[in-house]
Length: 236
Image (tube, rainbow, N blue to C red; front, side, top):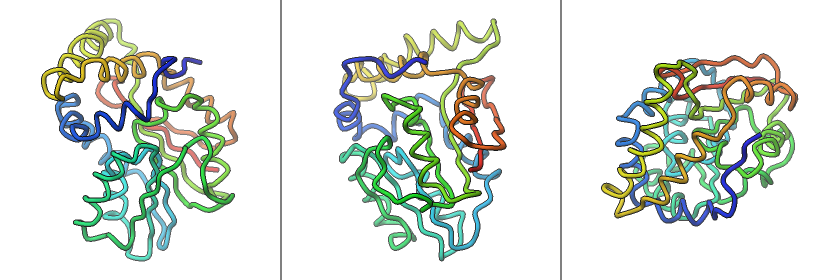
């Protein structure tokens, strides 16, 4: 299994890119990351009074969307290891309609600071590939989910179409780092890293099998943009 590139201080990297993170997400994905999340949300069932954990919450976009799509008794906890990303996310939460229903905490997705069987739903968007050990991360997600709880993983993926794949590699390998240099105050190296994690991360079928091997059941997969991203849904 391919892990994150060695010798990369991922926390420091995300602290560095935090000020431009939201803008760059929109530029790099041409806004499609929002549509992907909307499609994923449309397939989720959120029970009343749910306890939801959004891992790698970053600037809290998915945490806010989860609060917006649930009833007023539902609580969303967003966890991230980058204090700079969380600081931006907290400002969004404070200005939202849900400051009392969203709690942002700093923590490690591979050593979650929660008791067993705490959450009804766990989500992680574009964060699993940044864990040094995705298997350990999935094991932690399984541990803190309640029996019957839902896991939703939205992640970049690799197209398997022979015609599309070379253009995909060109975009992520060459174009995206240049965007970082132009639009993110010269952060070329940081966006090279993000390309490496995208290109080296396991394919969607391997991830599905890993989830099953972790103990999850009923794993289903949706792919977006000719395989550029994939959503995995599973239950404990």
